[in-house]
Structure formats: C-alpha cells, structure tokens
Length: 67
Image (cartoon, rainbow, N blue to C red; front, side):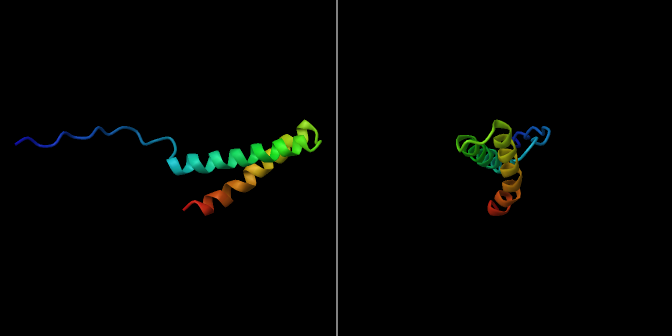
C-alpha cells in the first residue's frame, strides 16, 4: 500500500472569495449610484464623487450582511 500523495503547499491566496464578493457588490452599488447621479443631470465630477462615496459607505454594510 502506498501513502496518499502529498498536497502541494503554495502561497495563500491574495484575497478570499468573500472579500472579492463584498468588493464586487460595493463597486456595483457605486456604479449604479454614479450612473443615476449622472443621468439625473449632475456633472460628471459629482457623479464620480457620489459613486465613490456610495461604494465606500456600502462596503462595511455589505460586509456585515454577508456573514
């Protein structure tokens, strides 16, 4: 009988799947808010700031919701 083959030990992943999902959802929320701000007649700079703010604020909220 032979022993099972050892599993290769590589470096740990850069980020977990959970972190990637939380950041992806936050970016999507930011894009939606920024797009709606722009479509409502706001300037492009205001839409970018609104989108960045929405993404930043939604990150801890999404982190709390996905547990």
